[in-house]
Image (tube, rainbow, N blue to C red):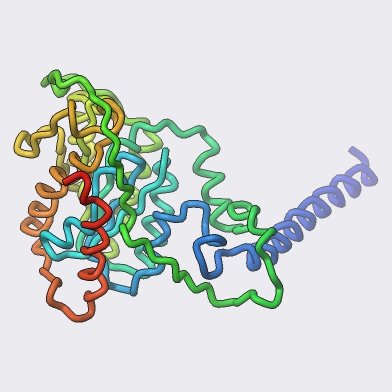
Length: 322
């Protein structure tokens, strides 16, 4: 390669670097305007799990993460009513563990819960090699994640201080009143076999546990009842992972006292729980968390009066399924 060719090659490399830097700068500037502002209609794409951003700082004792198995099984208002600790469900449909990690980091910027719960069904959702990369890029550039917000932009109303003020009265729980009969036969047949967790997912779970540990937050892995998605092979794999990363593991599929009836307690034939199943799970889990993690009962704390007020709304909404 002669000197002229070398100079041209160097110019092309410099030009490419400058282009990438300018593109990144433009994306950062545009992302400033596309970042979520104030209300639900123009906030993030995952509205319910991000509802925790509207909660007062340092007020939530338990934060639960996961996919749809989590937001149909965990009811913060029931556990508040019965046990008196504030919790929030940061779950979204088909949530990848890479996205779970982002939600954990985001939530722990404003909250220091006693315990973080990771629902384990998402551990088996296979990620493409680019899923984690895309999640990180979207976190850096809001315009890529919230590009549909251009319709709502109004230059006169833009505020450099993001104010998340939409509150979810259900605290991340999704009420499911439907009931589709499933098969009531035994599905947790004991075995020594293991269904391996995808390596990338296991690594992310370990990273989440390490991050929480550095924040002084305990991590609990929980498998919600699901005759369609869970089995003893998966139980064994998660138990081994929990031991490896130094966390506790609670498999609710093995807690006979919960007494899930797959004829009546599932919304979709054994995949997700309906409200009847949720009541049973939260009656057990609320007591377990309160006792195991020594969670204070805050129902008489004036600072949490808003939570007491939500009980009436919750009971009215769910009255038909009592």
